[in-house]
Length: 387
Ligand SMILES: Cc1ncc(COP(=O)(O)O)c(C=O)c1O
Image 1 (cartoon, rainbow, N blue to C red):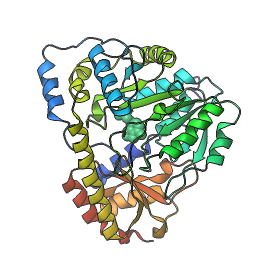
Image 2 (cartoon, rainbow, N blue to C red):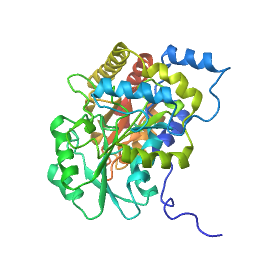
Image 3 (cartoon, rainbow, N blue to C red):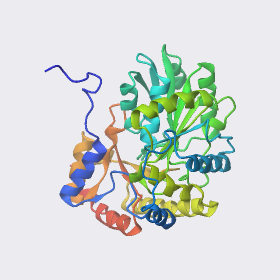
C-alpha cells in the first residue's frame, strides 16, 4: 500500500490526553487536561432543554447563526471597544481549535513560516504543519515567561515568515502580556508585514492587577490580526465546541470559505442555547473571575505550604511547577510516577516546550475546591518522588 501522508507521519498522540488515561489507570486526581469539573451556567443548559423539541436542528448559516453573531459582536464591542460587523467580521467555528486551523489555512501557503512562542499550546505546531507551513520558535523564558525582543525580531524577519501565533493569556505559562510587550509584537508585525493569529480563549480569566488587552485594538493591528476565541472556557462548555474568528472583512471572507469546507457550520442548537451566555451582564464575568481567583489562590497557597516552586499565573488556569530538585531526566517519567505514587495527574512541561526542557510540569486548577484540596493533600507527599 502507498504510504500515508508525510505531513502527519510525525504526529504523536496528545500527551495531555495520555496523562488523562494514566490518571484514570491509577485513580489519580486529574489536574492534567484543562477542563472544569463543575456545571455550566444554568441559564444556558435550561435554554438547551427548552429548545430541544423545537430546534433548530438543521444546518445553521455556514458562518454562524445570525443571533449568535449579533450577540457576539455586541459582547466584543463591550469588552474591547472594537466595531465588529456580525456579517463581515465573524465566523463561528467548532471551538477555537477549528478557528485556529481555519485562520492558519486562510493565511498560509506551503513553504511559509509561522513564528510560535515556546512553550506553546500543542495544537499550534500541528496547525502550522497541516497548513504546509514551517514553525519558527521563539523562547518565552521561565520563570517570568517573557521574550527577548531581539530574538523575536530575528525570527520575524526570516525569509518567508507570514504570521505569528500569540496565545494571550497563555496556556501553559499563565502569562498575560503587558501593553509594552503587545506593542513590541504589533510594531514588528507592521514593520515586517505579517499577520498575527491570536488565541484568546482565556480572555475573561485574567487576575488583578493584570488586564487583558486585545491585540487587534492596537493601532494598525485590526487589519492584520486574526483573533480566535471560544465559549469553552468562559462559559464552562468545552464539550459544546463553539468558537469563533474575528477579523477584517478581507480575512473573514477567506476564513468563511475554509470553514465551510472543514465543518459546514457549528452546531445549530448549541449556538441557539449559548446566545444566553453571550448576553450575560458584567456580573457574570466578575463572578467567573472571582471564582477562578479563589481557586488560583487556594492552589498556589497550597503549593507554597508544600514548598514547591512555581510561576504564579497572571491569567488562565494553569500553574507551571519547577521539579528540578527531584532529579529526573524525563519529566514524562516524573508525571507517570506522580500519578502512580502520589495520586495526582500533571502534564510534563516538555510537551509544551520546543527547547529540550524537562524541569517543569503543568497543573490546572479548573476544579471544585474539594478536588483541589484533595490534590494538595496528596501532593504534601511529593518528597517521595525524590530519586
Ligand atoms: C490556549 C488554548 N487554545 C484553545 C483551546 C481549545 O479551545 P476550544 O475548546 O475552543 O477548541 C485550549 C484548550 O485547552 C487552550 O488552552
